[in-house]
Image 1 (cartoon, rainbow, N blue to C red):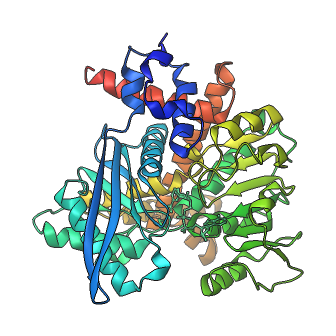
Image 2 (image 1 turned 45 degrees about the vertical axis):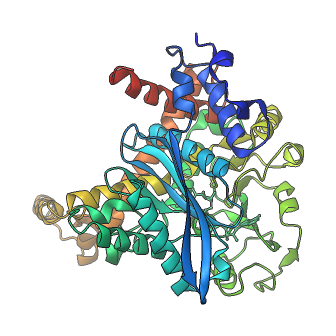
Length: 482
Ligand code: NAD
């Protein structure tokens, strides 16, 4: 058995605080359950490299200096994959923690990517679109010049503060610098469909949250450990953060019959015991930048957003940022199930406390993996230069039409045109993406749940996720002879 204490010598490990040390501690807990050659756990845990850039952009008649990072936690296998975050308080440790999570997430999901993450220290609200485009293009030049951006080596995607638009600026700048790269469109994912993106990428992370929760409910041995009902219908849900991930998760869960009883945003919380209208609330947040002033039924608004995490509910979905559930508030959390739509929203210490309280956590490694999964589909579409379903769509339709014809003849009846239309479908890109995503989410959840059932040392879904990820990465290292 591996002696972790001697191998994991990084000074940061001695601190129990901080996002990066939380990720490290979660890793170490799982590493104790995976037999490995001496030194390998340390090699896997540590971030391979972090590029720091400080570049100037001439704006508003003067020079402004921006600081950015791109961390590569692992490039086994290549390319390394992970979002780019634009935020005012980001730092190197945060980027490295997020890059590590990407390595473990891609391994757990069995995606052919290493883990990476990038960030730019910027308050996006202070700059116009034209200025943001100029800043993004300069950042892209720096990343590309240093080999931290390319379809074969490192492929960013949107994250907090970035969007489809940021990705299309990056892809376009990369193409300008590398007109000979026939796979240039695959240098980033999360692009608009019209610019080489894929249907269903914008909703993918929230859709993945929905599939993960559905799978938990469908897995009786896991659901029955909680006091949750057999189906999602009527479950009371609280969501923190109504951005890309939180909005889509809330929308899809409401469609499944859940009641979104509270939404927490930067400026406070809005509650409605019989369920908020998520579309109306999203429209309000998009226009005003917050939940304050929302009118849509008997709304109760209060400014203590963080405090609302402690309100009673069936499912709590932190979908904003890291470390929001910590040693200071974990004991007051009143939910059965926490679904980590954000990266790292529960600290290591809070995870321990919640586990003692019997709260189930669907960890970030799987809960928010829908984004990178559909990014994988987009990257494959870009490098194959072929839309999904193109070759087989009509063939499948003809086969289905023949089957219906045969049924009509043998049963001596005629199906309605409406029924025929519903049967005879070759599958749109969106349907194929959702099908692929559902398969990946369900399979990953099942692997975690099975491992917990088979190995009594694996006591929760997070440990199961890390053990599976680690085992896969270890296998890769061993296969190449390290
Ligand atoms: P986003 O910027 O679209 O949304 C974040 C939302 O959270 C915003 O509405 C913001 O106002 C709100 N917020 C920020 N601080 C808050 C606070 N203290 N309290 C309440 N609300 C707050 O970002 P996103 O893309 O939705 O990402 C959210 C989380 O999901 C991040 O942890 C990100 O790393 C993770 N994630 C995103 C994706 C993706 O595809 N976008 C994929 C995987 C994981």
